[in-house]
Image 1 (tube, one colour):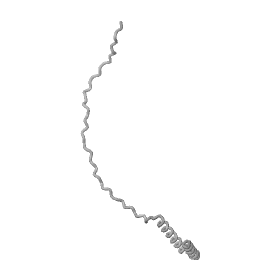
Image 2 (image 1 turned 120 degrees about the horizontal axis):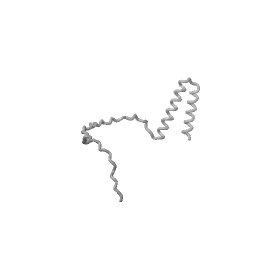
Image 3 (image 1 turned 135 degrees about the horizontal axis):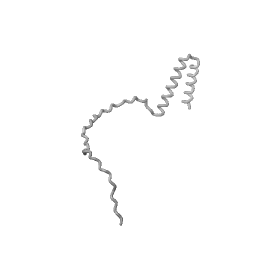
Image 4 (image 1 turned 135 degrees about the vertical axis):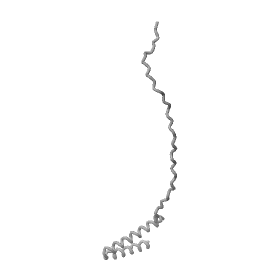
Length: 94
């Protein structure tokens, strides 16, 4: 565990320098430590830096125009005079 103890010593040294510095140096030290931790995490996950996605142009397909078709009307019959109402014939019982 010598590597881990070396890292701990280096972090303690950074911490002691950081405490006696002004706010700008403290923020820069924090940014360096954060960036280092992020790089280590990426290496452990075997990830590459994300690339910007390139949007591919989809070719425009021609839109077919609808054909004009003649709508056939059912033949119209001339109106006829209404038939008078008659009752149905009844069969006579004997």
